Length: 264
Image (cartoon, rainbow, N blue to C red; front, side, top):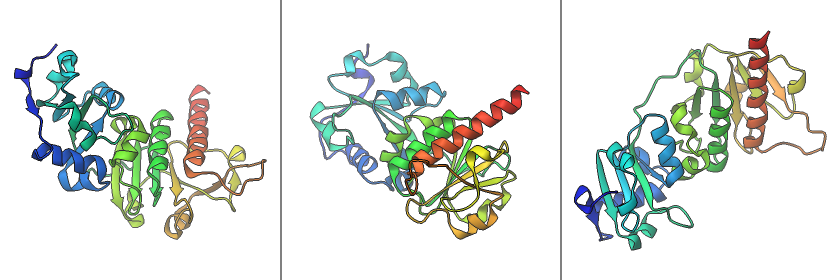
């Protein structure tokens, strides 16, 4: 239980903090300008705390504040209580949540040369990017590298689709294809038209899977650097899979191959 004396109370939509939240919730690139990420809803907040990370600010709806979990209040540098009527000003959800965290954008990091990696080559749909991050985290990949032109990894829609996967991954974005030269693991490229079928191919571990643009596929630079080109059997006759679905199939296959190798 918490009292209003423990928090800053905001009741005006003109408040600068509300304006910042509005930008973070509605503008895909705002997190870069502000250096902050808005995590809305119980699930994302729990995912952040479960990884031992700390929010800069905990934000609570006024009606929820009296029952706000004390550990959540203590986890943040400060707490802000917002009038319920203001939540629609910055909520990205159809049914606005009663809690959210403002999280400092992680510092730009160098890529990890030996890590099991997923490379996003101009994947533009935020839902696809978030889905791929979830699959990467689920199947034991440590790192996701985003080539310029990929949807912002910390944008609101990607965060919602990622469902907390962000906090267990090493994320680097804004890269050029040429900057991946430091990767020291085999590059596996998905293709609809060439290469070996996935179910016939021995998969190396660790490796780096490249997932390409929804319409154009993997670009020439990374296709030319590929150690393996792999296609997915589609006996149903469709021309291609959605990139999020293709990533789930490929990353699962790698995880199974790694588990089988470890069991031998």
